[in-house]
Every structure is written in structure tokens, then in C-alpha cells.
Amino acid sequence: MTVGPGVSRFRRGRRMVSTAASAVLVAAIFGFGLPHFASYRSVWASVQMMTWPQVLLVVMAAAASLVAGWLVICSILPSVRLREAAVVNLGSTAAANTLPAGGALAMGISWTMLSSWGVSGADYVLYTLVSGIWNVFARLGLPVAALMIMATVSRPQAGLLAGAVAGLVLLVIVAVGFGLLLRSESFALRADAAVQRALMVACRLARRAPPSSGAGSLQGFRERASGLLGARGWRITAATAVNSLALWLVLLASVRGVGLSQSQVPWQTSLAAFAFVRLLTVLPVTPGGVGITELGLVSVLAAGAGHKLAGQVTAAVLLYRAVTYLVPIPLGALACVAWRYAPALRRGDARSWTTAGPGHVALQPAGDGTQNSQKGVPQ
Image 1 (spheres, rainbow, N blue to C red):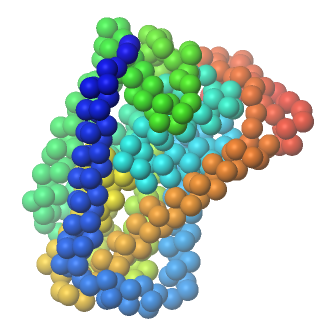
Image 2 (image 1 turned 30 degrees about the horizontal axis):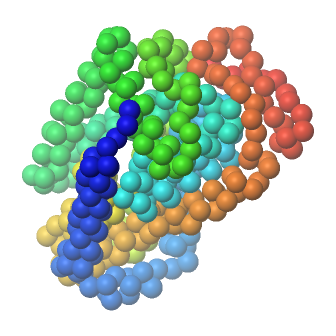
Image 3 (image 1 turned 90 degrees about the vertical axis):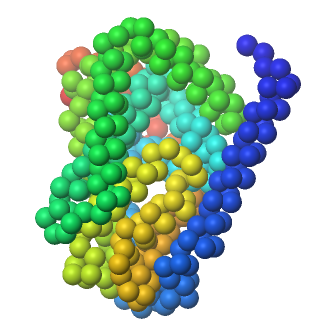
């Protein structure tokens, strides 16, 4: 399908306006929103007062959160090794956190890397959908659980209550949609067309050819998804839950690291704030939710607090974002370089895992890449 020059100019103009609006929003939040709670000088003073054990606690929590994200990929793609999952996760995250169209480019980067390791287009579509749906389930379900926990220590704020209700409604809608995807062939065909359009945009941004076997992949999605979830559903669910909780623990470690005690900021309140902001950033208004995440967390955690406490809360939130948002960007750049030039991360053995039966075996290179060994795919 050929796109006319007028349509192309309109799309470019729309992207430019969207990028400019995103930049203005981020600048307004960091220039006026956050300083309303605390000055950056007081934030830096709170960070400087941290002890080495407190710094180490935050670093360890951030490292555990990164590994938890890699385990999600391995839970859905058991043929992908942990170091390969790390490269995919870091590379795609760096793109998503820095560019206005980062989400689409992240998809292109993920496909390019995974296809170089033998993951087929059909398997990639299944991986993208299952990981995306389970991530949405986690984002929508966590506010409800967090609100119930928070109610044990304090009266929930009206905004958190509204967020939990909205999350519950959206969770039901997504669950119904996923059920239709598994049961309705016509719905699966329409979803397939939407996924292919998104994948073509992603590959065009990444300057890679789209997967030749991707078209029509959702036609067999119901059978493949049923087989995958039947064999590895509990692993995928557990890995997704651990990933969300590990990310929250980074926030909690940052809160405790700047000296805020349980009486000042209860862990239940930090969990509710984390869940609310995760729900707020389901739609990528800014790259990686930058600005919106910081303002949302500070607004909830510092509600009704004094100036000193607000300064510590702001310091904790910015520290949390520094280790979870900024640090993965240079790590992602290094991961892309490693994927491009490290021979140990380049292999081309084609494998299919989603239809594997109990007796299935897969060929997988040994650690030095010189020989193959057989091993059963975990069920």
C-alpha cells in the first residue's frame, strides 16, 4: 500500500507536534511541578546524607529489578538464554526511555535481536502479545491489591481509590478481550492485522525488514497460546509478578535510603503510590513515563507532609528514577554494541518452542558456541 506525500507530511507533522508537546510537558513538570514540593538543592542534600550501606541497598534492589525483567523474557522464551534476555531487555528499554517513538523502535530492536537467535516471526508475535497482556494485567490488578493493603494503615486518598476502580474496570475489559482473542477467529484476525501494522512501523524505525512469517501469525494464536500457557503459565505469571514487585522494592529501598522511616512513609503507602503511577503511565504520553512518574509519586507520598519531609520524598523518587530510568540507557547502548560485535551473542539456529510436547528436545549451542547439546524444554 503506497502512502501519498500529503499523508506522509501529515504523519511527520503529527509526530513533531506530539514530540514537542511531550517535551513541553516534561519541562513544565521538572521546571515548575517538582520544585513546588522541594528545591533541587534540598534534594541533593538528602542524597548526600546517605550512608554507604543505604547506597548499596538501592544498588542491589536496582540490580535485582533488572534481572527480574530478564526472567520474564526467559519464562516466555525458554530457548533464550539469560544473557540474551539481558541484551534484549536493556537494548529495547534504552530506546523506549529516550525516544518519542521509543515503544515502536523497542519492538524493532527486540525483533532484530531475537530473530538473530533463531526466534521465528510467529514466536515473536506470541511473545509480544503474552508479555504485553500479562504486563497490563499486572498494572491494572496491582492498584486494587495495593489499595486493600493500604486500607489497613490509613484512609486511602480519593485519587488512589478512583485509580483502583479504574484499574479494576480496565482489568475486566482486557480479560474479556484476551478471552475473545483465544475464542473468536474473526477477532484474532483483526488483532493480527493491528499487530502487523505496529510491527511494520517498528521495523521501519529500526531499519530492518519485517518478519516474513509474521503475517497471519494470530490465526494460530489461540492454539499456540493455550499450549504455552498450559505448559508455562504459572512461570510467566510468577515472573511478571516478581518483576513488578522488584521494581517497587527499588522505590522502597530509595525511600528508606534517604532516611524516611515506616512511621513517616509506610511501605503500604509506597506500594499504593507505585501501583497508581504504574496505572497512570499505561499510555506512553512521554518516553518511559518521564515526568509523569516523578510528579505522581511525589504527589502521593508527600501529600500533607512538611517541607523537610517533602524534600526527602522528592529525593527518594528522583533517586529511584535515576537507577531505574537513567541507568538502563547507557547499559542498553552497551548491550546493543555487545550484540553487534560479541560472537557469543550471535547465533542462527532456528528453534520453535511453543508447540513442543513432553518429549520435545531443542538444539542449543554450548557456552563456547562450538558444539550443540540436547536438552528438554521445561514444561
